[in-house]
Length: 205
Image (cartoon, rainbow, N blue to C red; front, side, top):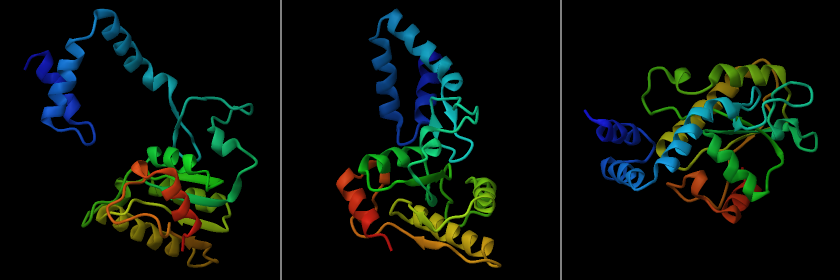
C-alpha cells in the first residue's frame, strides 16, 4: 500500500466520508505546494497539544488554564450562566450549534457519542461514569436531553433518561425536558440553523 492509498484509508475513517471523497481529498493535497503541506502537517502534529478537553463538560476548547488553574472551558467558567441547568448533548459540535442559537444559557455535558440500538455495552460508548459523577457532585433544577432526531440518537435519549431515573431513585428527580417543536425527524443538531434550534429550545417539553 503506497502513501496515497494509506491517506485514502485514513480519510475514509472520517465521519461521513466515503471512498470517492477520500480519494478527492488526496488529489486535492497533491495540488498543494510543499510549504502548504508542511504547514498542514505541523498543524496536525500540534492539534492534540493545543486543544484540550474541559474536565467538567468534556467539550474541546483552546484555553488550557483558567485563572484558578482548573482547566475549565469558557462556558463552564462563566458565572453569568445558569449552573443549575444542564443540557446533555452527544457531541462537542452540538454545543457550537446550540450556542449560536443564543437560546440557552446553562451548562453542558458532552456524552462523546451515541448508544447504538441493541448494543450490549452502552456504558462504553458514552461518558456514563463522568455524567453520573457530575450529577452526584452538582445540583440541577432542569436537565435537558438534547439529541438529534434519528433512531440511534432517540435510543440514546431514552437510555439517558433511564440512567437519570435510576440515579435519582432515592432523591428528587430534577425536571427533565427535551427540545420541542422546530426539529423534524432525521435532523442533526449540528446542521440545524439558529432559528430552528431557538424554537426547539423555547418549546422544549
